[in-house]
Image 1: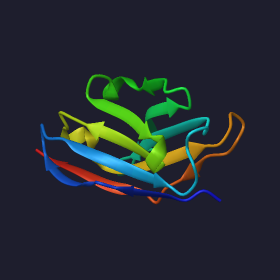
Image 2 (image 1 turned 30 degrees about the vertical axis):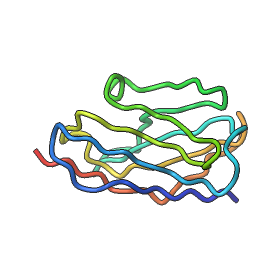
Image 3 (image 1 turned 45 degrees about the vertical axis):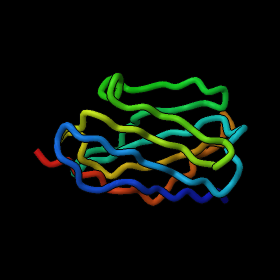
Image 4 (image 1 turned 45 degrees about the horizontal axis):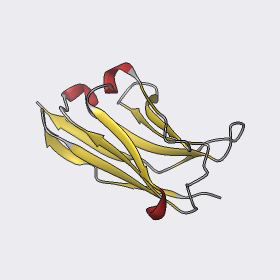
Length: 117
């Protein structure tokens, strides 16, 4: 089983930045897809960004231009750089991996990000 551990969350003022990290217990070089989701209080979990083994990235609309997903294969780590944060970005952020296109997702335990206005 794949284990994922997120770090880098916390409290930040509106307009500030945070970088989330996710260390994966197995090599990520050939993992089909890695991504970040988030879940705000009272809301469903939603996709933030994904990165494929090829390096191709996708972002949902609210993340475009503000967030950057990246990965370091040598460190088995996925990152989410978040800039220009606002109160609507307050949520628990989850890292996820998919070994293949038909595999189920593995999830981290989540990490809290709180943006104060």
